[in-house]
Image 1: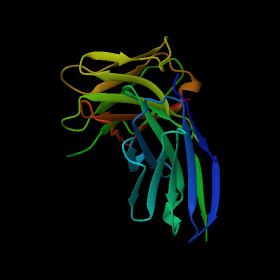
Image 2: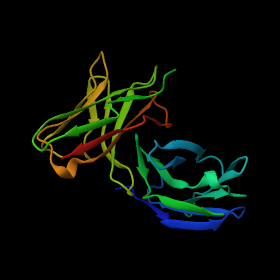
Image 3: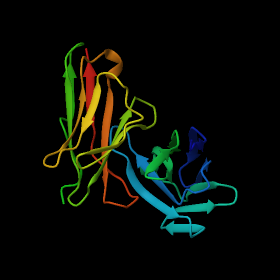
Image 4: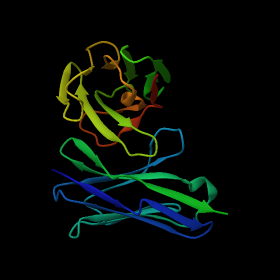
Length: 110
Length: 113
């Protein structure tokens, strides 16, 4: 079945630096790739998504890139701030399901 | 739009009791997903429902767990004869028909004593 692998499991960066989280997927038919942010004790919330007909999408300090040939996609956060500290989940749509990565705990060091 | 509403937010049960978790999807959304999350872990898919239909329950244990999404009213996740291992956060998410974006509820945190 479809599988999504996410790396790293924990990422610690200095405030102001950039953070990159990577995911790979196995189903070549996947065509939708969202990223969710989950703060401690809160619900997951969609922060950005990309569909398979584009290679990159940007929203202020957040960007997502997609390489369909290699079947991987990445989340890029620039100029990190303390409020970026959270767990980030990637997902890939396979049929009617979102297949989730295991999550990356992002720690922003002051 | 009130978003996805889950209740109760916190539920405490003793071993052997029943837990009922409710989820009202966003207005206009007819697809509901239930996920389970243990502390410090990811989202584990349990069941996907549309109105009056269970589409995929492959992530739900065969025993003690059941889900429904009736024509009228919220979706309900029911756990019978709860055990300590059922303690977790249970998230519901909804989406419009045919769409990809999931909107999550605030979750129901079940504690089994």
